[in-house]
Length: 379
Ligand code: FAD
Image 1 (cartoon, helix red, strand yellow):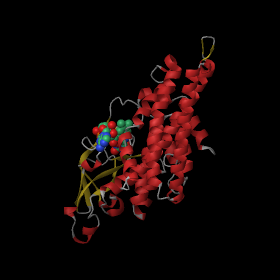
Image 2: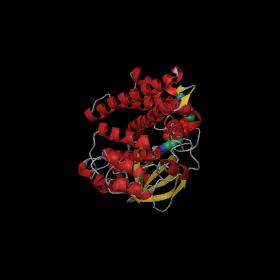
Image 3: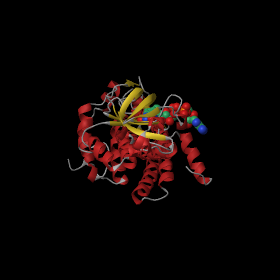
Image 4: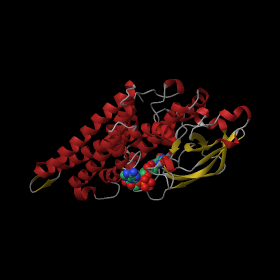
């Protein structure tokens, strides 16, 4: 396929509703997209990726988001795992892990725990050094795509007391580590989250870790880092991807609502001729255009390496998620009973978009970050 958007349109066809109802994406499709590098399209060519700019990957993400938010969620997780490996991994680790993620392997990234949602400093997953290995104990929750993943990028507190000899400095200092854990490692137990509100086929799962032993070489960068640096960097990719995914949700809603308002008649005229319905359409258009512009700006910051990147990304995520949640609700209003069925594209968007206001930094956490920026503090 020359055009990845046309490829995904053909692969998804009209299946998104069925996948949503079944709560499952077809794994061969995920592997096909992954093996062609499209699940994490920003990975550099040298690491087997597509090397797309943030702007180009963003437009692609929006297209996938307009078709199926579950598939887009899997892309976000794969991209976030790949970005964490790229950003923190050594050259050897990049060479070992990234080609797997651009070669059909599937990945997920786990931060959240029962007592550590918005407040990731409450994370208690422990990573203990034991000779040439590290041992993980803990419990991650709501890890998107974990049900499908071959590799899990997991974040935890580092306990380096088992370091010895020349290895002592290899994983030491700082606070936290990101570890690449093959999902079939003994002690890993992946349990699906039952009946999620939206993105039902995204493979959300809890991940229990009971004395999970992996080589110390799976600790990214071989050393621990301040937890805020580690999670903020990884989440930044997720925020950008979710923001573009929300642009896609808005585009799907805009198309459905406009078509419906142009064709269904009540009181002898198309719905769109009624001024209050026309206002809904205008608001939806404003929501989509505004989200697109903030995402384009943030992606430009990524592509230019601008110091504004962090704030622009939080802004893009906050604006796009809020616009998508409100825009999807507006679209349901325009379609009324025509969308009041489980599985309708707009009903699905309504459920999916609400979750986007919770993840990768909730609305409230984004607002706090933006205020901190204004007050001259670290975001
Ligand atoms: P809480 O932190 O308990 O927050 C509850 C409410 O209180 C929210 O509205 C929040 O904004 C508000 N709140 C909390 N603290 C403050 C404050 N200081 N000031 C103002 N308001 C506050 N986690 C992963 O690690 N990996 C994933 O791939 C992943 N995917 C997810 C996918 C979905 C669909 C969902 C629903 C969750 C996912 N999560 C994932 C978990 C997600 O990151 C958390 O749900 C999120 O961080 C919020 O945490 P919480 O649900 O515990 O809510």
